[in-house]
Length: 283
Image (cartoon, rainbow, N blue to C red; front, top):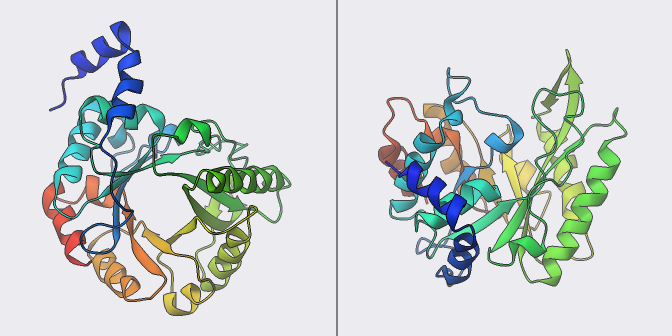
């Protein structure tokens, strides 16, 4: 179990050690692991107020438990990356868990889950300059045709893609077509919606040379992934069916890996190592 008291003491007495650890981190030689794919653990949910895992609405609200699960996942063979916000990644830095890992910082967390302004995904975490000791940045792009607050998010994501590309860093864009239904923002997970969202995301910024897409499993993935030549990673999925869906998606030429969070960090039965190892075996 991570020593929370020690982490807090460092933050209180020696906050500069975070920057020192970032500079000293051993960087990965490439984005892909020995299996030729990118296998990442996602942990950027809490910063958007999305703490649910399974039946527990506050599962990710226990930081010591989350860090323990993350450290277990990152230690497993074949896991070569992590996605998170500054607070989570800095804890992992202080714990020495990020050497040789592809570190992607989550950038826009302002569209808090369940709020009236959820579609307004402002950049409230990393910016491109703040990611200089990481391998790239990830942004969420939800396109709501009925909400004009989508436009500023599009512009902000385009600027972030360009800023990251100027630094030769990956821009990981997670696009959706979204609608507000019964007061909640819901993503439209149809092939047609994903094709439209992906083609919009691929065109953001001054160049697409460093852009990767982060996409969910939907029906007819072969047709969906045929919409782009950009490299893509697969997100999400729950239960036994997720492994079969991931395996089929990984057979497509555009799909270059997995970025999975709660499904592996909070698996049924609680065995994080076994869940991660099984996902890695699909690569």
